[in-house]
Image (tube, rainbow, N blue to C red):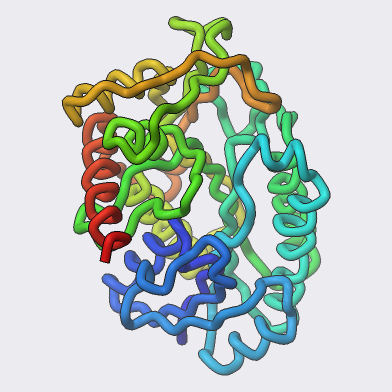
Length: 329
């Protein structure tokens, strides 16, 4: 028996693969390596290079490796890019997820965990945001993920198939042991961009929007360490394997930081200034979004261990240094 991790050579997927491998699980990864890296995977994981939208490939992989559960990370994640290319996002995030779900049902897979996003809430009307909050995505990225959540819900009602959708808030940091981290060139994650700028990998960065109705005018986000997020997936998988019902959970800490507060943290931890230019707002960005995380804590027993902005930044900075040495070889 094994667990299929789609996008398992990417940022969050590789952390998940390591978490499972560390627990002695057999892991098989389907990844087209567009943004992923072979070296980011655990040595024991089996890699199938291909597209999650290829139902024949997925079904053959499930049969060959005895897959019993699927954890689905593969997809596109950049909000402004989704605004510029909505059809590309609906194809990659929704159409291909539909194909993956269909292959799972046809192969008898009963447990499915989906990488969703807080972007499904859009401009949240309440803070912190609860799983029952109004769903009004502001971008094709958020809409594409919400469509997949709807497909999972309807599929679970029609088949012997259960799922957990985890709505991520802002994922950051890197594996504390230095095995993997955010490695994609041109990545847009704020903490990575700020760390690259502080270390001189970028000449500067932009702060998009300084006129929001927040404490300092910049966007506020809930930053969750990628290691804690991987462990949330383990808790969700255990829930399903033990016969738990389908459900949706927020993955965040319940504490928000503004863009300027993040830049201050990077400066504080690195000891270096961050050259930042103030720029206009980007389309699709809500002013503030912070998670209510009591549901996942109570229902799944999830207990974060890395809930500290400076620690998250420290791990991100350490990874950037290691990545520079890797890329220089």
